[in-house]
Image (tube, rainbow, N blue to C red):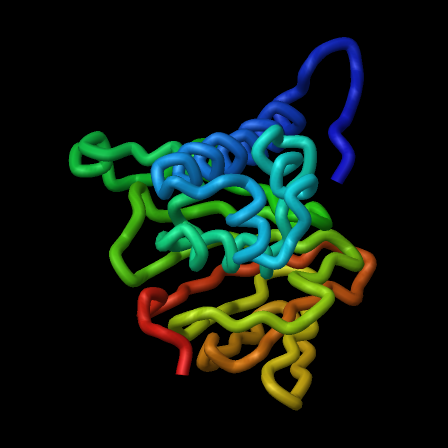
Amino acid sequence: MQLQHGDGPNEESTSVQDAMDSIASRLRELRVVRGLGIRELARRVGVTPSLLSQMERSSVNPSVVTLFRLAEALGTTTDYFFGNDRGAAAGENPVVRKGERAKIELSGGIVWERITPTDEHDFEFMACMYPPGATSATETQRHPGRDYGILLEGKLIIDVGFRSFELEPGDSIAFDASSPHRLTNPGPDVARTIWVVLDRSRPPS
């Protein structure tokens, strides 16, 4: 997803850069805390050291699959990469305004927005956006937990195991996330979804 350029930084491009910086800074910070070099972490995740270095410099975004592999290799969850945790303030105001959501941008322009005030143990509640032609991964992915999703706008094809499902606005789906799966937007419009992931810390079966 290319950033817009103009006379000055606009709200959208600033938000996108903040989302990229959130992944980069937290990735680098946790890698150092875990005592892992770039080459070793890259080996565990299955990417090149050069690509991992670019992720830590906010030059490129990881794919959905790579983000899950990074979380697994670093002993954390994908929610860790959102940053912008409101901490104690969430107890005072449990409302998350649309413009205040913590977010991360992945390769292909896919955007995840956390719609809970803070990280919830074994639970994720997200608004996700898939640009036209975007896919969550070239290969299917697996991760702990169970996924529940509803499509709000656009179209979405979801491959689960050996089956393929095409969702229209208002359609919902639930499946074991340890099954190989992939999400693709085949339409000309942005696909907007809401996802809930339960038991995300459960080991894949």
